Image 1 (cartoon, rainbow, N blue to C red):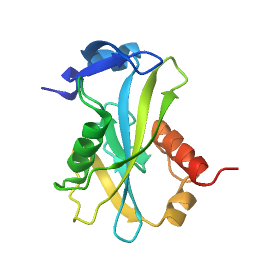
Image 2 (image 1 turned 135 degrees about the vertical axis):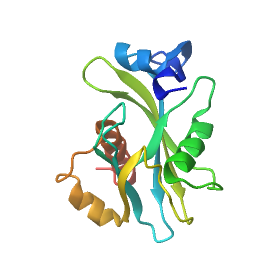
Image 3 (image 1 turned 60 degrees about the vertical axis):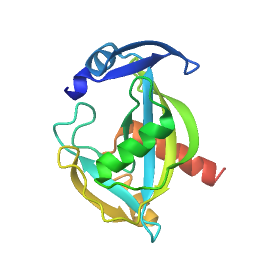
Length: 171
């Protein structure tokens, strides 16, 4: 089954399931669905940063400070966070990612998705999926912050990161 054929839950503005559709149709029609974002830190606290491959359906070749993706039909956010983190990092046996918060992301052109943000520590050697990740490194947070204005970031990941920063350092 291709990624476009994966079945996703369609949700309303309150994150209640109201239907199901194939992922390709969800993207094409801008239907509201669910996604997970997992901030991965190594034993030294550095953050896993990667550049997406040019073949990705959404946001090809952009940088991201999260691993994650869509939540499958009937799947919980928690299960999707662990599945996506292990798949994208190429590891198994990660601890369960710690839930931080949810928010409704609006892409500004009619599409939106409920986004659950998590954090996990990965002390295992990573082997990211070649079809998902073109480049990766664990960066100190100060280096990530320096790169924010320099690199082109996945917009929903950047929105999640900004919300995370606001929660840690309220104005």
